Image (tube, rainbow, N blue to C red; front, side, top):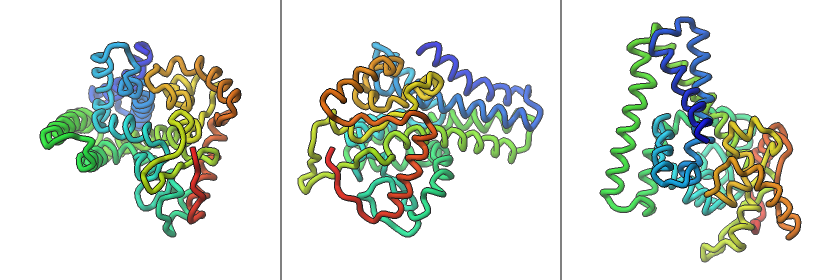
Length: 329
């Protein structure tokens, strides 16, 4: 994990330092650096801060806290992410209006319980573009929108807690934008519009990579979207719920496992979020065998392409089916 952390942080920062230092002078070099940084940012999000925010990077809470700030270093808020991901996504996986990962804007429909409109009929065609915008939205507006919503829900306690978190987010973003845009604009031998285009390109690549990894784990044909009853209760046991709502992909790819931070073993991650992802490949055969023994779901796609194709089909189904039957976990 330490080696991976050094590699991925370097992959993000070194290209940016080369741009700021004036070492990069050609247009192709500039955009090459931004694309390299995109892969570094993606790797930090999936393979470094993700474990740290779950408390599984290290046995030391202090180390986990410090490493979780790598998310703040690339423009997002680790405090808001913990609520959105650890609390809402892991606790209420694929449950409409509770799992914030499937609470989409009006032009996307990720749950059969969400309201359908005419635009959704074509979402399997245009969703990919908006996936590419996801991290750009994240570093500019989404953290503030979610923080305000979580405060109203009581997930950020008290006015002081809200205010302190807000100022912390603002401070981190000032530092981030000063480094990622301010310094290149001051020192790099390129016009404003080219730096801005390179920055947007970086986020297009990052947003697409990260969103695809998470979407093909939960928005596919096999998985369930459990519905709460009139009392707000979801039938079933938590472990079975996670098995029914989650799907692995590319379990035999060492490259994807390394780069995606083990998130291709999404089943194992949802069952054991407090275990470091480097162990998922060893845990997976035990989980699969146990699921088969007790005749419970264990969903997995053999490769990335098949998982993406299944996600494409599910986008079409959700866009063209007004109401699916409620499912039990």
